Image 1 (cartoon, chains in turn red, green):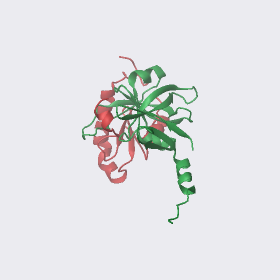
Image 2 (cartoon, rainbow over the protein chains, first blue to last red):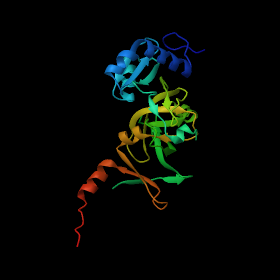
Image 3 (tube, helix red, strand yellow):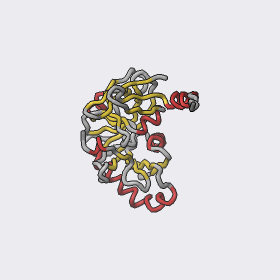
Image 4 (cartoon, one colour):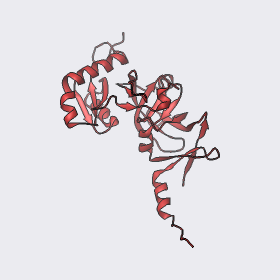
Length: 93
Length: 144
């Protein structure tokens, strides 16, 4: 398995997402739903740090500024997922 | 008013877009499906994103139209625009879909309004600012 610049093996997309969701549930969800409803949180799966912003783009940009080699999972606070898909994407084109 | 026309294929609207990894190189042209139910910027097939050299650093899920969640997808920064326009930056989803897709975030960042019309008009886009100016300038006709 290839290694990241942190020296850790590079995880799969599934691993990053699951780790990010676990960190969010355990560390941030309870407080974020009260103060950041509808905002986006980029969870750094290596450091467990969360970066919150009004847009997905900005949350990831700020998170990358803090850790340019970081791997992140994007959450929309109090939503099922970060993005919504239309019928086209839902049907798998 | 600058008008970009697209085409309707099997009932779905497509427009030509350019995607660039850094906003400097001319960019690769794709025929992208316009999906106003998609809240993101651009979705590109993984193979297209790989050929462009996009570097994924983030993952995310979609909520599908049936309420279920998608498998996580990788995200990468890239620049996109309608063919002939200036690039804007956004988060591109690298997906398993066979077609490029543009969503509401693309329209907002580009400042575009989508027109869907009869088969003679098809699909098109204009600058939101131009449209608002045209509407404002149009004088209501007096009833005789």
